[in-house]
Image 1 (tube, rainbow, N blue to C red):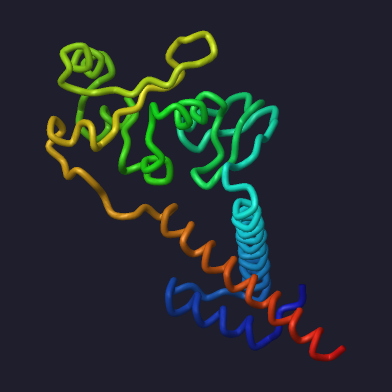
Image 2 (cartoon, one colour):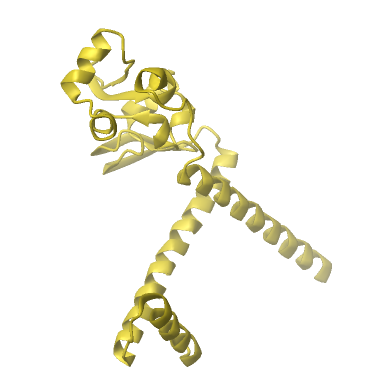
Length: 208
């Protein structure tokens, strides 16, 4: 992609003003092409998210994805994603999807990590180590939601904010997450896209 001299000079001034950096011509071109590639990647990702949103309007329950490996958006584990699932609550391994479907975990915590804690979160945020957390669960001071694997053993343990806010002495709820706000933005982009398509189709009809 060719970048105009005007845009390059504009970028040079931004780098100088915001980062106090004087770039030579080669450095300026390198930065420009890096940014172009970065935003191109973001645009591609946004396009894929819009496509998924539009597909979800036709398939609101989502669809199966059989991938060899991937990262579950809920448990965060990199694992075999055979029989995984994608819906408006994210891309989930089959264990987390089953837990969601069976009501072990509520929909409301899927796109907002502030509404749930893992063992690592309890340690990092509250100084509660895993063994202590397990002891507190046994004493019913902490409430855990356990996601099981196919063998009936624990795949992932999660602590919901709404279950434990009193013991942890924190607010019951949190503001919308960046993921939730992004979902709203994708919905707006999708509506804009549908409107443009409708206008184009209407224009074609008028010209016939």
